[in-house]
Image (cartoon, rainbow over all chains, first blue to last red; front, side):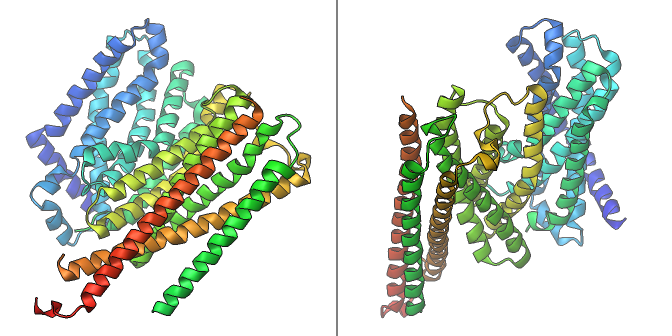
Length: 225
Length: 235
Length: 51
């Protein structure tokens, strides 16, 4: 309980900061939209073909925008030695992990909220009724991305060239999430439900649960003053 | 002190000699004694390299995992040195496995590379642990580098089963395993001489691995001593 | 390239790479050893206590 309460307070702090400055969110929005235009030019395809590619393209966009967000994740803490202050306080480091994961998750969720419908509009895709299911799958994948992303952002925090290092370390680890999400989305688009991809969905949930647990347990060693 | 170092050196020398011997016998068996494969012919001899090197790489990653966990628990630098040494060797053996697989693939499958589940999985392993080495190299503070690397050593290893599963499902859902899978042959079909060659090769790889590991570990140890002495001297 | 060609290529690359790695490891090992000995002898040398 205490853990969750601490996490909630930290999350509120981060959201408040973001609300005042809007650094990450705006950049991520623009970048996500920009990618859609790039995709349009790169894959000059009829709507039915682009529909087949939609899961993969959307996930590429989310991966890139998400990485952009992760690179900024600990920026506020780095800038004014706030991290040291945060670590001096009697705070469960697991709460810090949950808060940061939650923060990045919310940012990515907001971006996805815009980018997915925009994708449908820009590429004239017909299946509007499937968007809720697609969102469900996307959110599970996004959670997995944010969980491992927060851990890797934290371990690359003090590295030289960390913006480059972060995707280098993170992307290979994300392969289960990327594959599972894309397969689930494809199944949704093809059959209208996730029933045919239950194995993938289970794996996605398993991934989220495993790495949230590990993150809470291990974050103590990840962040050191 | 000097005596124990000498004894250590001597044992390392013995290990190295044993490795050399086993590797030589292994080469002789796998290239000359073992019969050619009934289906693939002589090309199948690459298996005597391929299987031992990937198993050695797996062993290495397991060592990275264990040593990383020990480091986070006890915070002793020697565990970190072991993890670092094992990761470096793991990357070497994984890279070699991919090269062997590629050379084996050309005559059997007709292509140097195919997005077969096993190949893809091995390539991802290489990426993860190459990332591990890059991460280590780009953090200056030794202690921070050690804990960051230990975290990656743990989450990376725990991620491996999931990656394995997802890559396999991805392939099997798309297309039936149409590719010839020489490594999936039932054991009873294997000629005893082939099995002997494989075993000797594997022993050779293992001995060689531990010999290289001990050298690499000692190198890390000496580098740390040098750093400490320099700090003391103010050089 | 015949089957033996592929076998030779694979064995050549693998053992070549391992030998190269071994040599480079040996070299790094020797360098570290020399440096360590140098630093230790500095420590033993008289006159350094002044600083």
